[in-house]
Length: 521
Image (cartoon, rainbow, N blue to C red):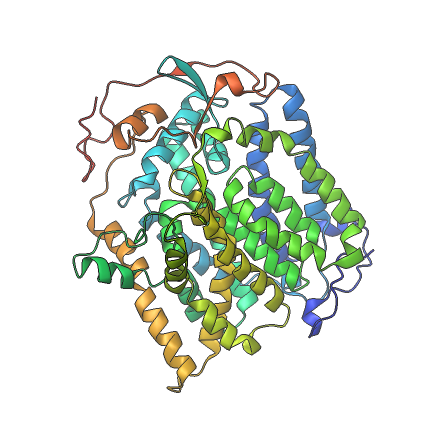
């Protein structure tokens, strides 16, 4: 059976030979080499979140989701790598441990467990985890005389909330940290596996990947710069990797994993079915990151030609359709979310040009040194850059979350290519080496300031205030339509039960927060 067949375009790494094994060989799956086991473990975490959420749906919605998860798991664990591939190799235990340790440090600095300062976005995320831990799913709220359902990408919270339901909120936060450290550590290990050489400098360049946001901030503010550099304009942001880690791991982790699997598909390490499984499972984490990965996945699928209709791919497509209730849940009352075309706004052309020069100058270096990339990566990287060129035209979400979050997979691919080129370029003082060094030095300001804030700003205690209360006390000017949908718009077959309506609480949430007086009642 053909697991994957790409059109020949360079070296043998772009093709996978036919597999002699049957597609559902569980005896063979039990003896799989461990590198593949790591990839499977990461995808399984995303699947288990969908399973946990499905039990909060009504029977008509839960049944297809659970069936889709079961079929997806069968396809995932039935896959067998070709002999001699990266996934067929044994795990490098020391490298894996180092990557997990790096992931843990980054996430702690980003505010998880509140050991260090947690950025403002964590106030709402802490509230969501607290509400799910106390009440379970589905969650209902009452505000201004109207009832609302928590309609949000809950993938990051569901499994930790299950732990919290059996223990307490502190256990839920520890479980969240453990889950995210596992996913990030595995991702860093697997991307280093693909890079292959000079792993330490590659990972440093990859993690610190950023635009040169400090330059427009210097022009605007001089040396009196803000503590967060990336909103140098009010409409668009392509976040640095550290910014994504510190502010939005719920979007970053699925975006990185989808980009990682796109690279594995391009190199013939996995088939399209495994990518399709992750795509369906990760919708619950971040539909915006999935939207950014969708054109790249479609591009990879089209490159298969007739191989697109292999039995495993068709089975994975069918499994993906069974996740439709989750997609419907995520789009309930979505019309209330702010959205508009930016393309036709006055001054957009100038903003667009400046934005690309500031955020993705790495693309010019990657293009100039494209001969140093693996032949299999080139077409996918070209598609990723095309996505980054198109995303600024449309805005969706309170702070244009479309650009900020849908860009994550494409930025991952650009960072991967840039870091590969950087570590392979001799420091000979030539134009390419000088351009790389200058870009790395200037762009390092953005992640450096993020880390500085984590180390300098005092940590504050985890709050158990509900979502409405946290929103009202931290950002009362814009109603959180990205979290709440009117109950009147919810299909009656979707929610399994009616629940307690949570309301605004008259209490303090963060009495020790260094920047919020927490005086709003």
